[in-house]
Length: 123
Image (spheres, one colour):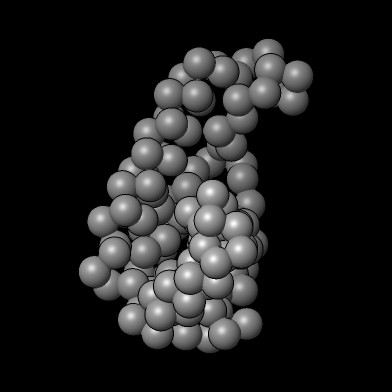
């Protein structure tokens, strides 16, 4: 909750472009042949999806300077605490927390962070 409160503006500026672009697509980027209908070009969707994900990762990695300092301090403290007890896991735990508990919820439910208004609909 603390992260969401302190970082909503950061997440909005970081994710809005990519998520708005995805939400404006008229079709899904389905890559599972078992879920796609016969008219879907799976390879083209894979290529497009990889491009979208790479652009989003580039944005994330390039945002280090604008990441809120109060949240950096929380992550540093988490790393220190983990390193004391599980030194071999310090990066996995902090990285997992950052991606799974911070970024992924905003990507999966962007409307709850004010990134998108309403739930995107395809087609």
